[in-house]
Every structure is written in C-alpha cells, then in structure tokens.
Image (cartoon, rainbow, N blue to C red; front, side):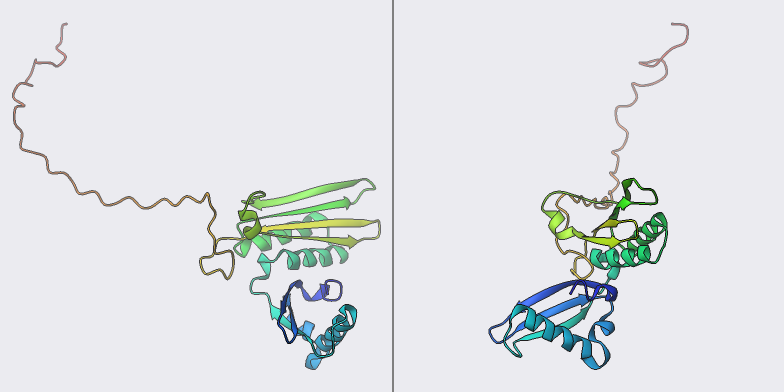
Length: 217
C-alpha cells in the first residue's frame, strides 16, 4: 500500500478484524485518487490484498478515510518532501518549506533530518528543527508522529526522517487528549480584598527628633 499509494498522501492503515470479515481502513490525504473512478482502484487494491495475504473471497474490505489535518501527519509530510526532492527542488528550500507548513498548522514542534549525498560526493546529514520536541518517555508515544522514507536520486539514495510533535487537544481530534505530564498551568491570581487599616493609635511617640536621623550627629 505504501508503494502504490505514495502519491495520494498515504498515511497509514488501521485493520479491524471482525468474525465475518476483515476491514482495512486506508488513511490518506487525497481519498478521491485512492478510490479511483467509480471505486475502480480500491476494488483492484482489495483483490490484490486478498490474493497476497490469502483471504477467502469477500472476507476483506478496504475503506478510504481522509486525514483531518495533513500537517500533523508525518507520513504525508515525508511523502510530500520526497516528491519535492524528486522534482528537483533544492534540499534546504524543500525542508524549510515543509517545516514552515507544519508549524503554521498548529504543531508544537518538528524536525526534518535528511542524510545522504547532498550536492557533493561526500554524504552528510542536515537537520532542520523548529519549536518544542520531546524525544523520550511515555508522552513520546502519544505526542510524536514519525516517518522515514527513502528517495532514489540520481547520485544515490537520500534518507528522510520527519518528526512532528502534536499539540495537546482536549477533544482528541487534532492531537492527543492526554496532557503532558510536566505541563504547568499558572492560574490567574485572585482579586485581593484591600485590608482596612485601623485608626492611628499610639503613633505620637514618633515625632521629630525621636528615633530618626538628626543633623549634626
């Protein structure tokens, strides 16, 4: 699926097994192309999957689901970067374009690493990062979307790695529901009620010359 649907912004699958049949939900940014005209392409894919994995007739079904926010999907961004590079766009420009697109669409942070023969014969790696990105611990499983792709260029193979840190979304649509464990919420200070001062008593002792600084000492 990854190879065939690369151009259509393939972003992973979800397999649901029920006793009667197996449902495979393909997530992609361009669902119309995945379906093909009058659903022809998805029927072809269904028969290919059925033959390849040895499913009985009519026991496997493919569905296409549109990705809500394609900027938050590392797979889709990796593919788009791959096509930019194959189209002959300069590496730096392509990467900065992807990073900016991801950040403008509400991600918390992202990193793009490209390694291989960039311009010269010597292979090197370039990193482009922006924003806040965690790389360890439990929240990494929920917050980081990561994808790796290979680009077959004329001189050799380039490797692309895209990491996106999603922003917290209480509804769980655009990002994970679970808040970051080290997230500190600072509440607004409460309104202070001014304390009424008692009437002046016993302040007569502090007149001129007592306890203060006198001249000439």
